[in-house]
Amino acid sequence: MPEQSRRDWPLWEVFVRARRGLSHVHAGSLHAPDAEMALRNARDLYTRRQEGVSLWVVPASAITASSPDEKDSFFDPAGDKIYRHPTFYDIPEGVEHL
Amino acid sequence: MSTPQGSSSPPLRSSDEQPCGDPASLARYALCLGDDALVMAQRLGEWIAAAPQLEEDVALANIALDQLGQARSLLGYAGSLMQPTRSEDELAYFRDERDLRNVQLVERTWALPGGTGSDFGVTMARMLIWSTYQVELYSRLASSADETLAAIAAKAVKEVDYHRDHATMWVLRLGDGTEESRLRMQAGLEAEWGYVEELFDPSYVDQGLLANGVAVDPITLRDPWNSRIDSVLAEATLARPEVSPARGGGRDGIHTEQMGYLLAEMQHLARSHPGATW
Image 1 (cartoon, one colour):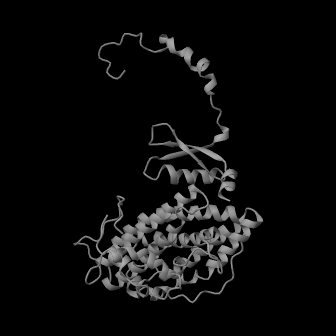
Image 2 (image 1 turned 180 degrees about the vertical axis):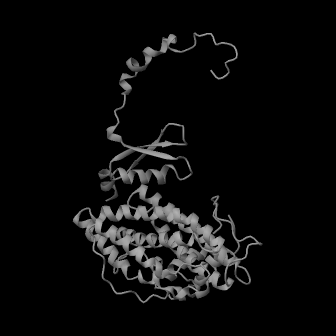
C-alpha cells in the first residue's frame, strides 16, 4: 500500500529563500498530492530550523534539465573564453567595492 | 520532559511579577490546558514512523512537538504556582490517571470504534476539532490579564493555526476526494464528535479567573468554533455528525480505558529511573 501511494504522488522540487535579498536556492525534493500540500510539506521538511522566509515548489516534471551527454558541447566551449570575464579593465584608484 | 532540543519557551513567572487571581485556581487552570497539550503530544507521537508518507510523518512529528512545547510552558507555570512548587517533569511523569485533567478527546487511541489500527481519518478529524478549538482559545488567552498565560498563548496561537491548516487541507481532500476517502473521513468525524462537547464545558474554570480576565470562558468559544468547522465541512462535502455527547469528566480525572496505557508508556521510563537525565 505505501509503495502504491508513493507512486501516485508526484515529485516536487523545493526552493528556499534564506532571507530577503537572496535568491531561492534548490533545497531538495519531496512527494505530495498537489501544489498546496507540497508547499506545506516543504515547510515541514526544509524550514523547520528557520532555514527560510519564502518557499517555491515546482513539479519535478516541469523542469527541463540539461543532459550529462551534452556536457561537452554545452559547457566546455566556455572554458577558454577568458575575454568574457571582466578582468581587462583598469580599476581607478579609490574605488573600493569593485 | 528534559528534551535535548533548544526550546525557546516563554519565560516562567519572574519573582516580581504577581499572578492575577488566586494562585491555586490559576495553577489548576494552567494544569488543565497543559495536560490537554501533553496528552495530545503523546498520542500524536504514535504516528512517528507510522504515517502513510514520510512527509506526513515529519508533519505530524512537528505538530506533536509544538503541543509538547505548549505543555512544558503550561505545566511549568502551573507547577511554579503550587505549594510546594513542582517541576514540569514531576507533573508530567509522577501524577496518576485520576490526577490528570485533560479532556477525553485527546487521550483515546486513533482507532475507529471496534477497530484496532490507527486510522488517518480519525486523526485528521480529531486534529481539526482540536486545533480549531485551540486557535479560538489561545487567540483570546493571548490578551489574558495574566502576563505569563498571555505570553504562552501568543506564542502558541501561531503554532496551532498551522495545525488547523494542516488538518483542514486533509479534511478537504479526503472529504471531497474519492467515495472511499469521503466515507472514511466521515467515519473519523463520527468517531470523534461525541467528545466535542467537553471542550466547551465551563465547570473547570474558576469564576474569579473569569471575572479578572485571566481565563477564557469556554462557552464563548463555541460559536466561532462552530462557524469555522461548519465551513470546512461544507467545503469538504461532509455532514456534521449527530452523535450524543460522551459522558465526559476528563477535567475531574475521569478518563477512558485507553488512558492508562498511554500513561504507562509515557511515564514508565521516568519512574523506573527517577531523576535520570540524558
